[in-house]
Image (cartoon, rainbow, N blue to C red; front, side, top):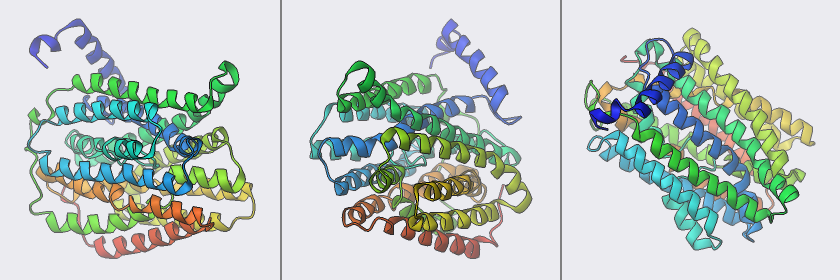
Length: 423
């Protein structure tokens, strides 16, 4: 962005709006450019919310099997993981703003691909190279770029609060997006559009949001030109990051067994929920997740980042296991709601913990390499869970997910309770 661009009327209006938004939602003392990243996270979260609900219905409507739903979900996560690895190794060589713009363009292309294609192999290719997210969390290439930038915009005492707002923004917007999963049914009922055509229109909206993100990120200054230490590959924190990445891979693999797209499929198949009803469930679950992001901050101040990660996660995993055996829809949803209120409290605290135990120049690489398991390891899960559902083992993915997550929680508590934050 040139100096003239920064002083144009449009740029000044954007800056004024950014300043008002920043004062309203950001912790005190945080650079106002963080507001742009929160808006971007909100737009992406909205799309992720309805995609996770509609993707299985769309693929089943195209005539694909449950196993294929799992395979396409796995392809999206594998592609995201490889892109995240690439960012980790090359992120220090390119301006972060340019990489964010490239990711936004890729998001637009992904929406166009899913809106226009109907056969398996082309959809697999688009899922692999694109930005589609079938899970409840953010596993995209956007994540390490935004996390590293946010970590540099806040001091140590406000970093957890900033990441909590970042996670909260994603969770709330995804909850609202889940409600939007009812729009195809409304379009079919009121405008007479074929249901598949209505779902395709939602992927077209996904593409439009990608274009909006391109315009948004183009307003950012060159992120690597900011004052402060330049991003570098991992150095003194290498061993800590590797150990964290290995443990995160266990958690990510477990989470891949019950990504939102497959949980939606499970609810539809076991209890006959419509996409609209499933969307309502994910909306309320998302609101509980949003509230938990706020609670995570004072809890972390009181008992510490690591303890917050572990002692809120284990009860949520027990609820997931119990949901697999619940005899009724009401009991199942109640257990899943309790899980939603607890399972994501570790997200802002985990991110803040990673940023705190590495040196500032290593943050981009650390964010990337600890985010990789959220997509690479979890990529195996959807295909495996799809095979379980196709074989009639309906409760197996939930039980396996809960049990593995408990193992992860105990392992990270024992392995890192003596590791102290650097900053």
